[in-house]
Image 1 (cartoon, rainbow, N blue to C red):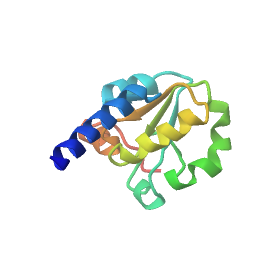
Image 2 (image 1 turned 90 degrees about the vertical axis):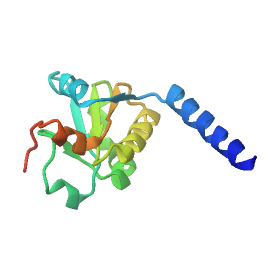
Image 3 (image 1 turned 180 degrees about the horizontal axis):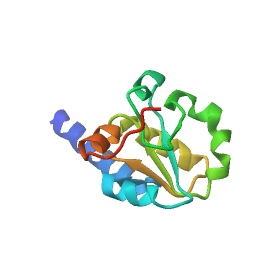
Length: 127
């Protein structure tokens, strides 16, 4: 019985979180639409070692652990559409949550991260 209550609690918590989050969860084709806008900002929150394998062209790299201390670097992007990604979409979801708490309005998380991006055969910049 306790297991059932725990699972039910987790389902309710997950749904509540999904309904109350202030950022969008998007797929690769929606991400391309954001990138095609002139005023968009792309943020890579992976660790330094992960970025060496390539990143989405034009992405600003700030590892998730440094996001709060380096948020001032993104201040000019507060009103712009922002696409955030990591390797799989988990760390970037956390980053999106932090960014919306800091007052960023138009924040989107790339579901599946750079892994989904590469699987869709979308370009990766090696610099």
